[in-house]
Length: 483
Image 1 (cartoon, rainbow, N blue to C red):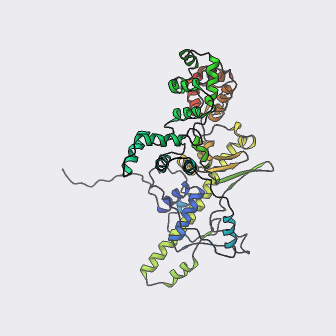
Image 2 (cartoon, rainbow, N blue to C red):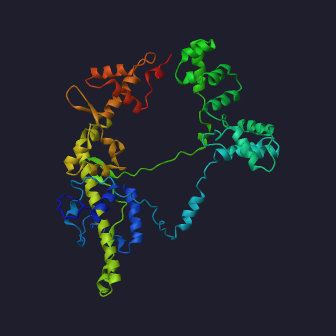
Image 3 (cartoon, helix red, strand yellow):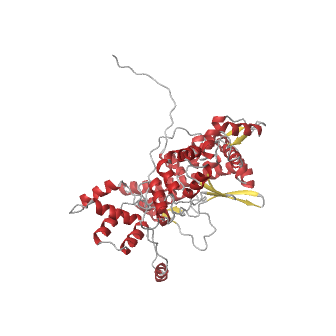
C-alpha cells in the first residue's frame, strides 16, 4: 500500500438550482402549477401577484416578457432544456393543497347563501334507502337492528363485503348477547327482500339468482345455468350447456337472453357518477385555414418581485442577516418566474411541432393520426428526448375534435405496402372494423384478421393482432361466437 497523487480528466455536468427548479416546473400540469405558485406566494414574501389595473390591461405581465434583474446563475440556464439527459432521478415533486382560497364577504354573501339553500340535496345512498325500507317492514325491533348491521356491511355494488358467517361472527362480538343463527338468517332474508332486487348477495352469481327468484315468474332453467354452469357460460360453451341440461340450443339461448337482462350491480344506481373536469394545458384552433397554438395560462397569476422587499434590501446595509434573508427570497422568486417562462416557451415549441407533424389529424380527425416518435419531435424542437417525455407528461390539448392527452399523439405503427408507417391507433381501428363486420356465427381468428390486413397492404404478424386486440379489450374469436 502507498499514497500517491494522480490526475484524472473527465467531463461532468453539474445541475444548478435554477436548472433543477426548471425541470420540476416543466413536469407540472397547469393545475399543479397553480398550487405550486400559491404555496410559493405563501412562503416567499418577495413574491407577489400583480393585479392589473384598467390602464394596464394591455401591458405584458411578469410572465410574458417584463425584464427581470439578472441572477447570479449560469448564463446557460436560459437554454437549460437543450440537449440535457440523465435527469430521471430528480427528487420527487412536492404536491400540496395550497392555502385556503380567499373569499370576499361582500354584499352578495346573502344572495349566494340563499342560492345554496335552493339547491337540491343529494339523494339518499344505497344504505340509507335500504334502512328506510327496512323500517317500513313489520319486523321486531331486534331483527331491524340486525338488518341495519347487515346493510352497513354492503359495498357500493350492493354485495356483502364478507360471507354471512363472518358477518354473523362479527355481530356476535359486537353485541352484548349472542345473536341466534335463526334471527340472523331471518334478518338477512328480510334485507334481501328489499329493492333493488339482488342486494345482499355474496357475489355476482348469487346476485343474479336472487333477482330471478324475486320475479313472480319461474325461471328454473336460468337458475340451473347460474348454479351449475357458470364456468361454461364464461367460456361461451353454449352447446355443452345444452347437452348437459338436455335442452335445445334455442332454449338455452332464450335463457341466456333473460340472464343478460339482469342487473349485475344493483347498488350502482344509487351512486352518483363522479365528474372529472379536465382543463387542457394547450389549445389549437383552425383560424381561416391556419392552425394556431395557444398555451393555456389565463388561470396562472401575474407574478412579480415585491417592490417593498427590494427597497428594504437597499435600506438594510450593515445588517447581514436581514440582507442575506431578503436576497435569498428575491433570488428564489426570480428563479421561479424564469422557470415558468421557460416552461411556457418549451411547451409551446413542443406543441407547435406536434401540431405541424399531425396536421392531417387536426384537419380531418383521429382517423388521420400519423405514427410519430418522441425523437422526431425532439429533433425538430432541438431538445433531448427526455425533455419531450417530461413536457408532455400528464398534459392535454384541446383540438377541433376533442381533448386528447399529448402522449396520445406519440404512437408506433406498422409499415404498409408503400413503405409508410401506419399509426398504431389506425391499425386498432382497422382491426375493430374487421371484427365488427365479421360473421358472428363464424368469427375471424387472429390469423384471419392478420391475413385480411395484409391484403390491405399492412405487414402485420398474427401475434401483433392478438396484442392489439387485447389492448382494445376485444374478446377472442371463441368468445365472440354467436350460436
